[in-house]
Length: 381
Image (cartoon, rainbow, N blue to C red; front, side):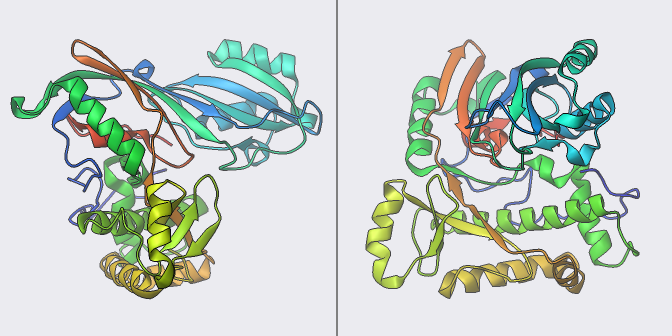
């Protein structure tokens, strides 16, 4: 975040299954090796893959930029001042890590954008301009196809000296991730620096903070609550060894699509086969005023888990916030298959390359392979 408006006054609650920086259940099981992550920005590279080409004409400019050790929010603010464009008129598809070298696309209305002047300003600021062209519309959130990651992990070592040889170990886990996917948890950064967003949930929820919060604070608190709910449901299902099963009432999502449908009891065998083939995946709740969008026992379980979670964080306050701010229920895949993971071992370092869909966290894929040497608290967008 965008941390809370006042200094924290309560501990951040992290005693629930699936909480950040705890021993979350993993598809691959708990790691047998450990490694350090984000030693330098250059050790964590992210390239945004747009998935379409600029139209070459229209009322907007699309610009591909490279930034280092800078949040997307800071980049947008800087670009707005540099071009005289209101930040809200600058489009971007996804938030990129701060402590990293990242490339991403921004869009600008053509009325306020001078390509030559902007390139000169970027050169002075140390921001790379990799491509720019006209386009017919503003870039919207979540419209890019994927993010490509290139990570360098350091100080790689076996935990307690046990386990397979590293290459054998990585080959096995790579196969598991390709066949079953990684647990699609939200990353630690979603919960704020020092878990300040979790603290904020308790403080606002229990009335320790009152009044009308700033819009940005409100949005981050709601986002954090939805993330916590999802992570708890995912961890509970994985702990019960039900992540790789289609359950009656599951809301399934088609691979490569946001199309969803309910799993009916008389179709479970066929749907289980489609899950094994990677054609569908079960989803979990991004909670809103409509509650669970699943059915049958899945909806009952989600409602019970979410009810207990919301109650401990303030109960009625959050129910009212969901209603007052018209927060719509949505879904998120519980697992994400990773079929292009590659690695290279060089003494005590491991280089990883892979792609993930928008909204999935590279740190959570790394957590399927390696335990952190120390809690990785890199706070990103």
